[in-house]
Image 1 (cartoon, one colour):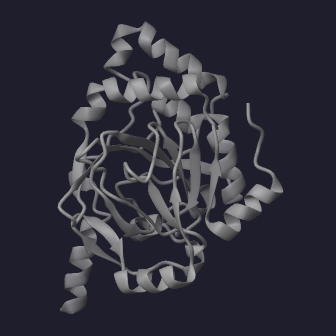
Image 2: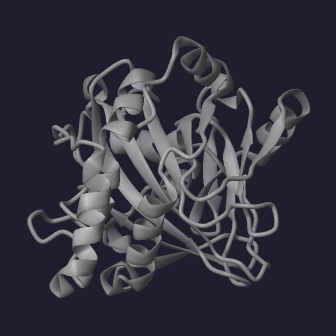
Length: 293
């Protein structure tokens, strides 16, 4: 299995705001995740759409606790948890995970934003959070791969406003940032993982290609950054880590057990997020109205 991050990789993350770990999961492991997600009725039942402000809709499912099934095996495995701990310089806990289902021809876009632009309102005091973007399908320019602005996390938290049903970063400020910082299209193969800082500006285009671009994103907060108030995402909850071998073992067991195909985490509730409780973006509208009054 790949070893921990070295000092040079951590330094790259600190300066760029992101780091790509190629083939962090092997072909068999990522195929278990891909097959599980695309055959999972519960994932589809809990999916909801977010208007991208460009005439498209992003489809996603979000859950707060990792669970005991294959999604939890990825989020709890040493490969991710150890790297999250190195990048956070603190004990990581599972803030939430999500499956972004950017389907062929109809998958919507994400506006320029920082994750902390969403999470700031949840009582998280500092941007010491990291997201781990796992490529389930190939991510290319044609099917709407992630775009990031290298080093933009050093700009601090940018003001966000409602863009469709998403939290979008101030477009004037983003335009100026793009004049000084490099735009990077992060093309990825299945099993690659992108680690990125919560203040890194990122977006993606709509998918007009014939190929889907699904991805699973595991988000971790630092224990010392425990939110000061309750929100729709959890406060500090110790992460029950698993050995890397559990990814394959739990994934294979899923397809040996017929019942597990419809119930990914029988032992622990994943706490699927009700889209009506996801106030991260919609609360921006309310705050804007308050500011005007």
